[in-house]
Length: 346
Image (cartoon, rainbow, N blue to C red):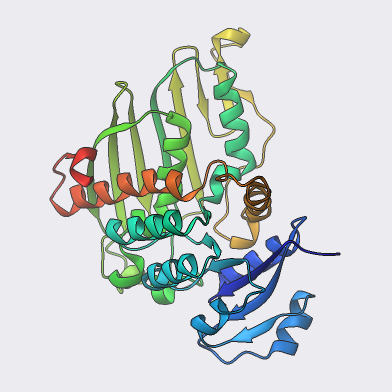
């Protein structure tokens, strides 16, 4: 089978494994190269992933390979800007793990470099492609909840020593904040379902007293209130120091009904207000990257490359809007909860 897109992976960690599996399962792409600072054996990698993979230790050497069409960046967050900008300048399309970068200036640099080079991007806000949010969005688009005036999407996931990301996630340089390192999925999902433009955000942060999370160099719990231009309000908690099962809490309230995770009530359907109706859908209820809907997302990306358009839901320009809100929230938290207008960030 011929593949239209040969993908080079930058960084070979936990996320990369899930990405390789998902890319190779798409209709028109395969992983052809891996660039890692660690010495890797090409034959071993090829056998493991079931496709011929070349190994590079230099990003520049991989970018010089004319057979590579797409670069997938799964390195540490502090290295994202360098790798993504270099890939854009080399004329490669880009898949970029979240966060896009650890500052808004760097995110804008990546988006600008891609625009200037005429290449397209995909940001791993893959929750937008999860069954739960595809169904939730379809429910909203059908008008069953009417017009939303309140929404909350919260991220509860204790990222402790038992989780692969912990070893680097504790540093300010790589983790950044509870919202940036992981809670960004929830805030991005909130923006997806609320639909409106954000006027201002107010955020507060704190941290657990548990010795388990002692090594974190930043606050590991935050709560952000959002005020939308259309008058709606929202809330996003980003909690990476909780001791409980993973929970992606979703509660939306509209003029015709409400939704709570996989349950809903709608006046339009005349459902009984005293009890919830149940939606059959897969919840976004796991922090394991192998459970994430990367294949659905990457298929949409490669399909959009075929069509010569930006991908739906998680293109660079779309993701930039979410990161403007995320960095505004972190600015508010750093300033003790001062409300930050989104216009201040532009």
